[in-house]
Image (spheres, helix red, strand yellow):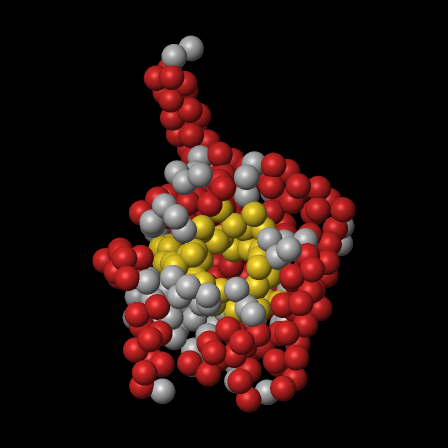
Length: 314
């Protein structure tokens, strides 16, 4: 088989996989709506109200799964040593169900989707979309994608990754759940499979709860991301600094890099640098955006020019 034949076969497989995913999502939405209709016919007033709510959620998520209402923005991740871009975190944004309302918080949309059995499908849509849009980013940046442990275990994730438009060596999967994982052996085995494909792992929200530290201990991620609640006012809080310093030391022993999320002040940035945190992201350095002109400027000049200007006025 020639190279051209192999490319055509790969393209057909990719198209088939995307079509099957769309059909699967549509079928799930249809089943959810049918079940809601059946429950509405035979329930109490309270159950009928809940059924109507579930039907509304299913319809709204179904609309997103059909390709409407989701866009991906990226937030820059900056090296504390060089001040230059090293990565980008993909973040989902959803349109409001009612155009007159404010956009719905992404966490709320994913949580609602889970209540009607469509959480994994919505996560996969976000992953597929992010991997497609990420092809526009500079090629020397890694791309970080948020996934729950349940999504990490799903075979649908493998399908999404195999259709990626960027090399999997550039992809970092951020594990985002705040609850305990019932079977870490299964999750660790899955992590090994993904690493064999070239991907790296990050544990999100370290410092926000016990679950994130369990993830770190059992999965040995390449990146540990410190939660905003730990970074906020860290310059003036000895307890926060002590905990962040302990995570940095622990990460050094594991061979992991530490990324501080939610850096919004120059004092927080300077403290992160002093503590030996490897990289930072937050509004101080750049808000999430899909404006490629802004990304080109960040990549060409590096946010280091912005930090120097801030330092000069501090």
